[in-house]
Image 1 (spheres, helix red, strand yellow):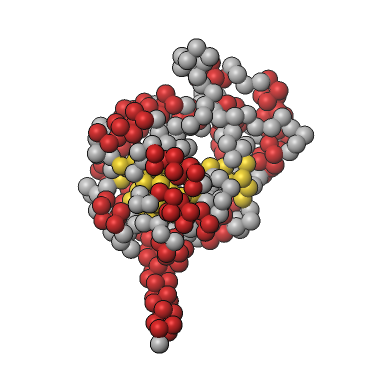
Image 2 (cartoon, rainbow, N blue to C red):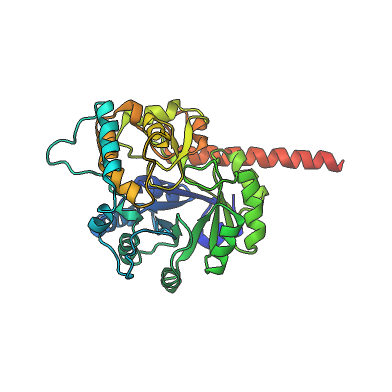
Length: 375
């Protein structure tokens, strides 16, 4: 499963895997793919450095990357241009929304966090100054790829990455977005379809991938969204992509650290129709398991979600309480429609082996069809 891009990066399979779990990213890299560690949950630079040290020790000298979140539009810039603190941003959250969170948690009897236990889910990583701090750490390590989940990184970040010999990738939900990335000096465009987990646009992968390939040629494109089998990888490459970007499929691997058997069970039981694209988690449309939490925020009778990063800050403690106490009706996670194929727990290596076998079967099938058509 080699392409020009995989050869450039020195990887065996053109499988790029985004994950918040270092053990998953490292296992994918060792399995011949390219592990990309999500940085958004790291609010302390020392914590990111610790896990990048671990990645260095467990990737056998093979390449890996980092994914940050630097929103193109943000609310953290004050009218005078100065950067606001987290406390300044928190102060923008209306009391009506805080009351709605309290009422929703009370309705479901969600206990408080144990005394002394802080919220483990603070999405301050959506704030640009936090992402910049993450990069101050990351560029001290031999990462080979920097990806931004919400548009092109600022020009100085692109230039800084290139100065370190690091390729820059950005996710796009339309050909227009992809062209903007190309103009910004991005090296790789990830065409992320509507089916994907997390933040997505409105266009399905089968339509989006060839549109983006045509829009940014000769830049390499990775297909993303609704991909969880080798046959689907073959389809993405047939549409012109030079690899695939997979995220959801790793959530039920044995190396993943969800810290909740109840959540793993929900993922294993879910079908492809059990997700919803909602702003409940971060303030931007993100595909996730449909729960009574997403239903509450999407209900027109409620106050509605706030823009990023306000929504993430607003619900941070609530999400930690839901996860800590495994409140099943509210318990969810970002995940794509491919969740319908995630029916068993397997190791990362087993997933990669299954993907490569499926890819080979698909290629053989197409070769047989092509051979018959020529006869």
